[in-house]
Image (cartoon, rainbow, N blue to C red; front, side, top):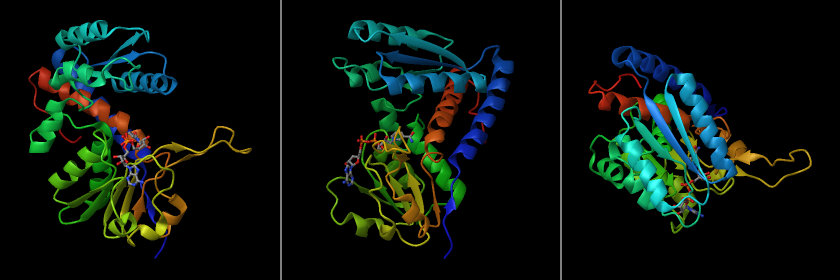
Amino acid sequence: MGEAARIDGKAFAEGLRARVAAHAAAFRQATGRAPGLAVVLVGEDEASQVYVGAKGRACTEAGIASFEHRLPAETSAAELLTLVERLNRDPEVDGILVQLPLPAGLDEQAVIAAIDPDKDVDGFHVINAGRLAVGQRGFVPCTPLGCLMLLQDRLGDLAGLEAVVIGRSNIVGKPMAQLLTDANATVTLAHSRTRNLAEVVGRADIVVAAVGRPEMVRGDWIKPGACVIDVGINRLPPTEDRPKGRLVGDVAFAEALEVAGAITPVPGGVGPMTIAVLLRNTLVAAHAHAGLDAPEGL
Ligand code: NAD
C-alpha cells in the first residue's frame, strides 16, 4: 500500500471561511448589519492573546464584526459577569466567546453558564452540551465539529464505521464521540484508564486522537487504510536547529503515514479548522437572531 493521503485542513478551512464570507455579505444585505462576535480576554496569557488576535483578524476577513474586550487579570467575577450580561443583551452581538483559561480565582463554569446559550458559539454551555447529547440543534464545540467536517469530506457517509476517539475532554473528546455517534459510526471513547489502547485503536476505521501527548499513537497501532485525525498540538523541547521546538501531534506522523489511508498533519490539519468553524457558528447564530433560515452549504 502507498503512503496515506494528507488531509489538508488548511485548504478546507480556507474554503469554509470563503463560504462564510459570502453568507455574511448576504446577511448584511438582508439585515443592514454584519454578524457580530464578541471575544472576551481576561489577563495576559500569551497563547490566549495570539488566539484572540487570530480570531479578530479572521472575523474581519470574513465580514463579521469583531468586538474585543481585553480586561486586566485583576478583573473581579462580578465585573466579568456584568460584561457577559451586557453582551447577552447587545443586539449587535450574535456570538460571545470567553477565551479560556481564565486567571486563577475566576470560575470558568460560572462564566460560561452566564452566556446566553443562543450566543454560545463555542458550544461550552451545559445547555448546548445537553442539546448535543439528546440530538437537538445547538452549538457544537468548534474543534470536534471541524474534525467531523474533515472526516465526512474524506469518507462521505460514516454509517457503520468503527471509530475510536482517544481523550474524553468536554471540549474535544466527548463531543467528538457524540457527533460520530449521530453520524452512525460505532464509537469507542478511550481515555487515560483504557486498557490495551493499541489493540482498541487497531479496530478503528476512524481514529481521532485528542490527548496532548506527543506522538503517543504509534504507526503499528493503526489498522491499514484507517483515517486518522490528529487533534494534538504539542511543542517538543527546543533543539539547536529548532530553537522554538518542533510542533507535533498525538500521532507519530511518519509512522502512521506508512499505514493509514489518510491523516491530518500537525500543523495544517485540524488546527486551522477551529477558527473557521467559530466563524461558521457565529454566522448561524446571526441568522437565528435575525429570524432567517439557517445558511446552507456550510
Ligand atoms: P485534556 O487535557 O482536557 O484531555 C486529554 C484527554 O486525554 C483526557 O480525557 C485523558 O483521559 C486523555 N488521556 C490522557 N492520557 C492518556 C493516555 N495515556 N491514554 C489515553 N488517553 C489519555 O485535553 P484537550 O483539551 O481535549 O486537548 C487535547 C489535545 O488537543 C491537546 O494537545 C490540545 O492542545 C489539542 N487541542 C487542539 C485544538 C485545535 O484547535 N487543534 C483544540 C483543542 C485542543
